[in-house]
Length: 108
Length: 112
Image (cartoon, rainbow over all chains, first blue to last red; front, top):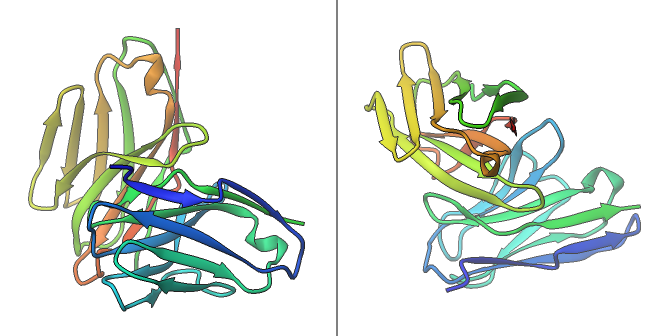
């Protein structure tokens, strides 16, 4: 039982490049979430998925897209990365929100 | 509106009690949560309290909720060096689709 896993752990991109952050959970949770964490700003919700097949915008969705591939997996895509997207990205699942270990992304 | 505030830093001596405070503005909160984040790690749920409760105790942790003042606190008894971390409070709103609003976090430093 791995809980919530995220890949990759670290990533460096150049401005304009695209990438997908992967998240998977093995707890059979309906809801999954993507947050970004920036110094002094706490966690801000990017997108969430209340159940398989549904996704909704959170507080800061601009520049991101998501896919709820199945009940286990919820991916976050940056189509054209910008330096303002340098952050630590966390995936969480379930009503009590169990968190993954995070992806540290730097956009140069 | 939704706004959750915390003080940025707290320093205590090992063995003392720590009290981390949080204020929120939305009275429709249903649950309030405390998470712990150690360096380089994700957030770990410590405890939560339902909005119709005043207090919840779990081993060294005591959560107090003053709904009238919209004030939440986390007391850690006999604070240890392993308690050094960032602590986040978060609220879940009625009809919020299980979305949480997080505070900015309080960095707790435990000194010997």
